[in-house]
Length: 139
Image (spheres, rainbow, N blue to C red):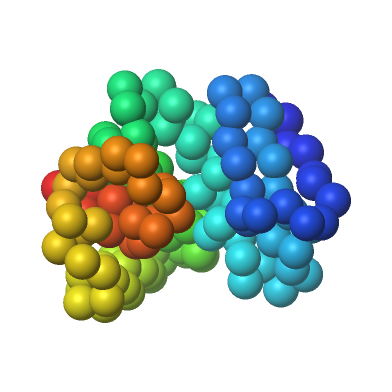
């Protein structure tokens, strides 16, 4: 897998492809505070594009699996010598995702919070939220 850097302005934090991941230079913070976003994009390359959706309506399948793998990577990366720390971090990250899901469900219309989206002619960005990531993760 190769990681390539995009010059600004790149609209998203990263974009995966089977053998090449694009990330913005801003994701490479010296304090590793954005490592989860890099782990997410790398997770797509490892498995997310193998477990993928036929149409954008099933976007949750790709993102839910990738979110799970991202959290496993990040918990392992922070384990140190005590495995209990890693499982605690995994749970804490999942709990934060659950809160984000609840906030987005309250914010968006019901049609934009269902598992399988019907995008039609609408702008996909209008329905973009944590819902497909977190609902897919929680299955």
